[in-house]
Length: 225
Image 1 (cartoon, rainbow, N blue to C red):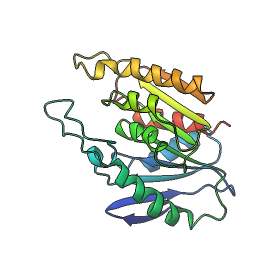
Image 2: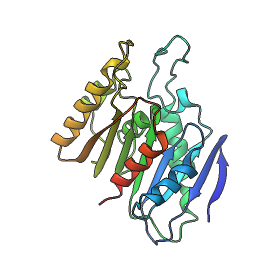
Image 3: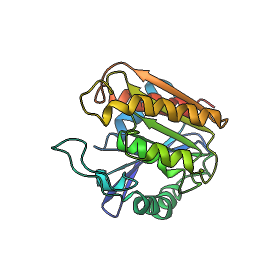
Image 4: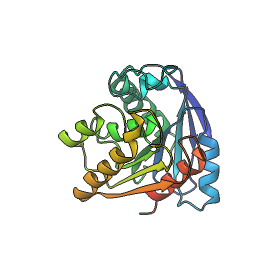
């Protein structure tokens, strides 16, 4: 049965698999959408997995690798708190979540939408805990993230990486966001050249279309092998 706990003001919801040793996906969420995504994953017949969804995040702090000015006039600046949040995730959240598991998970994955998709990619350069990565409509326009990836090595080579975008996400007058399609494709090609099993999925619509369904589809791809 689902169980919930709170650490550092963040709410962690665990949706367990009935299969012993099933993989676990850690999903950072913007608006506590974990349960709905888990339900959709069941409906589309994803292989068995446990979902650990984290909500109550300080979005522009916890998910940002470093400082970055607002993308829009009405947006908040990003203040790089990803390293601090990742420490909480790996040293506090994961041990407590997995203490309830009846068996050790076969592997751990990390996934997220938008800035959480950026964080998922960044995390593998700071920890070797995750072997599968889902960057769903990831904010890979983020200043200097591409250069960072090209010049650093992951702590452990990931087994699979999933990228996706909405087909209209780069069709904008915003000069920063215009590059998101190009940058995502370049990162996908880079990881592929390293022998990592990776895919880039282009979905119809803009950044805010079918968020739950896109998230479940990305998780499903990570679980295929």
